[in-house]
Image (cartoon, rainbow, N blue to C red):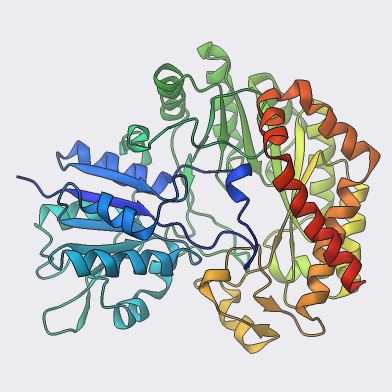
Length: 481
């Protein structure tokens, strides 16, 4: 009998430390990495299941009991920095009950720190360094005995020494991959709502269409997918959408790539194909301003683009020049203007707390945000993740509290020189208060009543908890102003 694998997404700290976690009210993203691993395993005839404890919270004891119910030979974890320690706790509990079960970790955090993690966490038997599909398949094909070495696999040998099979070449043809195993997710798609007000119709889901990034922003970790850009073909994507529509009734997809618009010819072929398909599905995407122009945005709108997310990060060009690759204020202005003219909603993505940032640069960011015609904004707290270029520099400047549980972009774990954490919290709350109390912003969200009724009903259902977040921000401003 072929060995069974259980893949787990642990539920780490996903909100402000000490506050009630409200992240599930607004957004639960399917674990695409685990879904693809499961699809690859089953295509080779290896039984597999997925436990997503973020979408379906459970006690550690309940998770361990469910994980061991089918007597797996291997339990694999994908873990962000903030969820890694929760994953290790589950691994220890699994080992305590079934010492013979092998434990595998993968993902960005594990790839970035694999020598340290194997040395410090004896519950971990294997780490998939980089892209995991080929590494996992080779491991299970070898009966969980890596022998002389498997490319991309780090493990602890019998004598306790750490062994590494060397880097695995990046996958060249992403179209060779199967569709992710959505059927392994309990309650899909209803259990995986998109962010509030980010979609016109339900059911909806997220989609990842490419891997890798050619840019060199200081805060991004490219250790898993590398710096080359690889993408599914438009034909693969259209077949994928047809599958989602037929099997699950999906009517909207949020394309989660960092660089969906990097190749305009690919975007054009996708849009033309979507219009010709008759699927009548809408989509969101993330775009870089330099790769967008008026004709492309008009075509995207005709094909069903409902919203585009544009990375802004900061309104201070000096800060951008230090941290964001290829920043161009003029291109951003043009992209916002052209997207709005095409009838596409625009969401601005910002970040606060960069090394070298000052209160004056934060004021410039707020002024920039208010001056642009954003339909929505999102502000994250700068976090120096392991593997990102700025990680080492962050330890040498400012104050860096490297508490992995808090490294989730909603806690200020890094405090730049000249700031206190309290002052950063003040400006963070001030940013949101300034934007969301404007009459035009309030009107735009009122219009969501008829533009995205499913989101509006979710908003009303969870209004008391969401208002508690607003109260928390108001207190931050009032106490620290």
